[in-house]
Length: 228
Image (cartoon, rainbow, N blue to C red; front, top):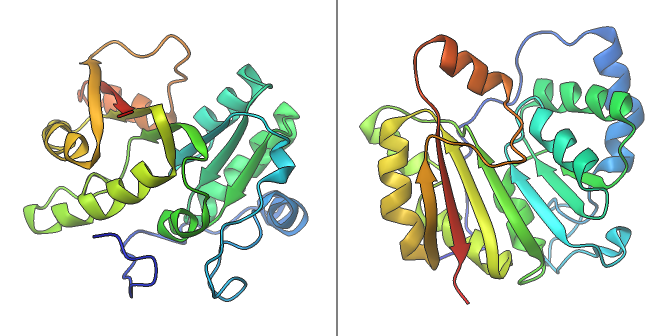
């Protein structure tokens, strides 16, 4: 059962290589205005739903773990009529994204630079129209599979914030991640619509996917729908 006030461990990376001067500038100048207020526990201890008025009634999408931000910025630029939230705890990835946002000039997005579970706590029920999980951390060791996003703790929280009929896309190059996704996601209230090696028509291949292809790991794409 999903508990928004449970004590949580976070296992992913938060910091990587030393940031360039320009990336530090992006973080100092842009991160604050693009971040959603009211997500962190110290600024919203009662965990009340956050105000999404900045999106002015636009359909709202969510990318969970945006990596370097290529796909997130592509979607924001391709669909200016929607709003999109990107969630990522890795500071280097956030800095990369901020540079891409400046270059693309997109303004229909917001960020949560942290654990997606904190965001799930405070998103209003049925507020998200589409969600993306692209090349998530595979946690390859069997004893770490419970840390994967495609487990019930994460998935039931995602299901709560998705609208009935909302699309949930998963891209991965790890065969065992596909296996677990096919087992776990339907249990959380989703229907499998499609799976295979052909990407979506509006897909933007990320640097993680390009690395997988260079190393001989074929991508797999899965599409689910939040049950009505």
